[in-house]
Amino acid sequence: MPHIKLPEGLPGIVGLFAFRPETAVPLRALAEVLLRGPSTLSSGERELIATYVSHRNDCYFCQTSHGAAAAHHLSGNERLIEDVKRDFEVAPVSAKLKALLAIAGKVQQGGKNVTPADVDRARRQGATDSEIHDTVLIAAAFCMYNRYVDGLGTWAPTDINLYRQMGARMADEGYIRADASAASAGKTNP
Image (cartoon, rainbow, N blue to C red; front, side, top):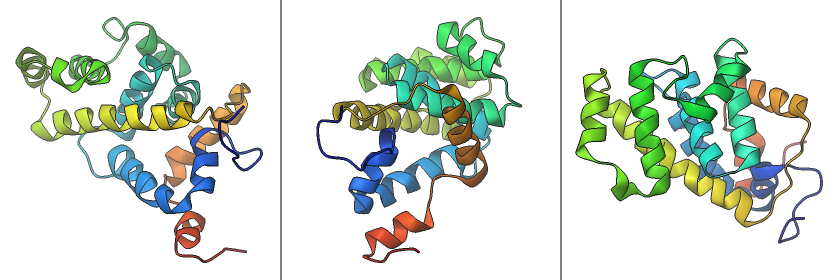
């Protein structure tokens, strides 16, 4: 049960965005840039980083919804998502992504846990400074999103099909919603 009165029937961060639309706008924009904006990392790889961090934070809503978005980007490969969450070092992903996931895991524990050796490993596997930067920012942002969702005790449905639908919508349509922007400006959409 949520710790504050949230709109009924809206899961996870969706309910929080409806509760405070003016804070939803920048949070959605950040997710859009990090997960769908221009990058040499695919959206699937970036969603996988968000999923991995959310899994480590034990945020069921975020790891399941972003895992579904990652799977949608990755041709529906839900097994890959589970393999990465279980042990990314043996999962069938590139050596570069493994190195970036290692950095994301260190950020999840605390930013100062990232070492020069972690960054050197990523560089040796072909990661650019922009990819390392974005990995750290995705990991840091998802620690915030996870704590936002769980810190207010939001509702997380258990029906995996609902998450598959959310994941497909996030992957196909993104994170910025016209209705959220209008609400923050004091307008309503019919």
